[in-house]
Amino acid sequence: MTYEGRYETQMVNRETAFYDQKALYFQHIQAPVFGAAVGILPEEARKSLGRNRGVIVRAVIKGSPAFRGDLMKGDILVGIDGQDIVEPTEFYQRIETLAGRSVSLTGLRDGQPLNLSVQLAVRPTAAPKSK
Image (cartoon, rainbow, N blue to C red; front, side, top):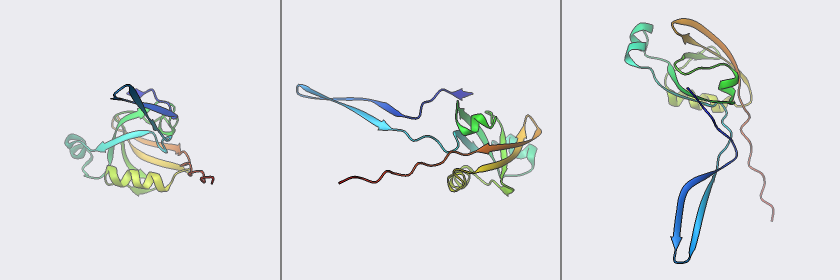
């Protein structure tokens, strides 16, 4: 499953009324470095793989680096740049440190070996504040 998404400013669905005034809140959304949500491997996947390490792709954002790299919901990822993927938190931390680079992902899709190359987005740096 892919999700439509934009990477600009997004309205947060919240209005607050104070007497005769209203406030509308907005939230700035940064473009994702990777653009996919991963989760822990389900029990049946761990048993069939014979391992506890790895992550399963839960969702892919349309137009994201993961989408352009042909990652799909249900893919199982076990390696990134030749190193094992242990669990989701560690996977996201490694992705953040590799921002802006092309990474090699290994895993399984429908039981078949999967090798993908994904060009990660660059994490934008904060603009200096003017005085």
